[in-house]
Image (cartoon, rainbow, N blue to C red; front, side, top):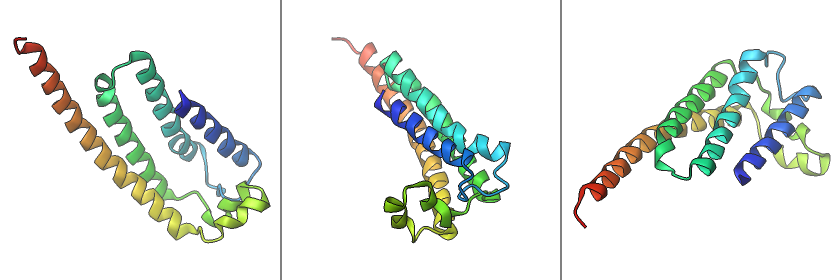
Length: 146
């Protein structure tokens, strides 16, 4: 539940800055870019809420794996069109905080998107294997005599 609240706050912060026209969002930050930028926030939040309701982590791991693939696709697509200007990332914050991001430039942003995509791919594979291993172990425990 805490993760869902944090996700909503992050979304509202980013969306408010987009509406204010902060230069971090380049002029070509169109509908498709917005979808790939914001949708992973909401799919991740939906999975967090589903885990809270369902109460069992392993049953939702296949969805986690697919969500990680979606995050990877979003990161790589955003990397290919790169509708951002990371030199203006600090503009989204008050000037008393914004100066901390002076070092953040487009090359760092590209690196972070690449890292996010690669990590999401690894996470997807790991989650799929973990699901299979845990499912096998649970099956083995149920079928063994007590």
